[in-house]
Length: 486
Image (cartoon, rainbow, N blue to C red; front, top):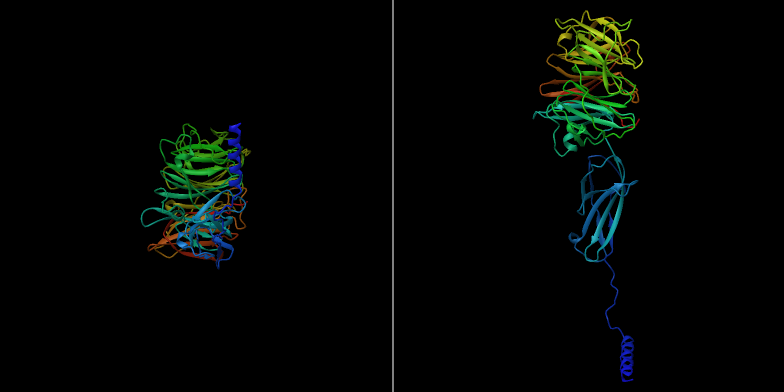
């Protein structure tokens, strides 16, 4: 009984204590409210790689040293918020915008470390690109390296695209050609080939993706890169390396597949190739045996010589100097005798269902300077091949079997590259397809680029150029980059 009395007394004391007045300090103090303002438009228009500066004004309800506040700038695609990109961690934003073109939201965050409370301000940003479409120029720089410039459709000239996009990195040594290739799935791939290495870059930003060795399951033992091309429907890709052909189908596959082993045989594959629409069908030239070959279904086979052939495609017996697209499924092949400087143009029909591939043959009878020419461009409209020697541009009229001078720069000017604005991809077209001729020149340490309009006769409209661009180094290659949407 005594024990129960003691328990009752303890419980009573506890209840009495719980009812006593709490004398703790529970006064509510207001937090530091932060308001963010500035004079920056909330809808920002900017080009990729430009610098964005925003200087916000911070207003506080309590005086906290602004240097002790924690700042954060980030941006994300408005349609894809989970993926954010950091822009800065200081009060004032001074950031180079490197994200891809699109519509973004910028989020500015200010955090008071004393309370742990954050305050926010949003901006809308639309990033555009100047690099969507235009002429790409591969230049030899004074330091012996190569760089890329561009003349876009707004006639803006932009230099050092690769170095700017890749924090000062340089292209592979002795880069010699830019290849802009389009797949059947609407993807655009941009490659820069050097003799011993190559890179793929993003088609918008010029940021480097990868190098030549990563394009293969097992890289070739010898890097001697001659060409990279796609079929005319963009359904297959081909690399010619060290006289061997590698092929890859894009059908029912993603765009990051790799090349397997080369197709072995008694041949040496020329730099020039002649693809067409069907699957991985393409014609090739074997420089070892001086004959045309056929590639289909990942195999290379010889050609027959049916009745009606203008020459024996399996026994041409000549050097292939140049090969370029003609009209339709035809290609123009400039051939040269092995023992002299006699030239001929062999026209082949690369269509998959062509009954006669060796379609036409024309001996060249009068072509000034042709034996010294290194620069060629083939028309996709007319039976013409343009070539340049020193400061002069000639037009070879194939059926007429002779050439004529169509333009001469002043003495002392060297023509370093020529190109026709021309799509050989059947899902890409231009209003002026095969109507614009571009030439790069070099003199006294300065490179220039000239645009000519091609008339209905193949001559240059007005017998001169219609646009001139200054301020380049020595341009060694020109390539037209189409807009990526088609």
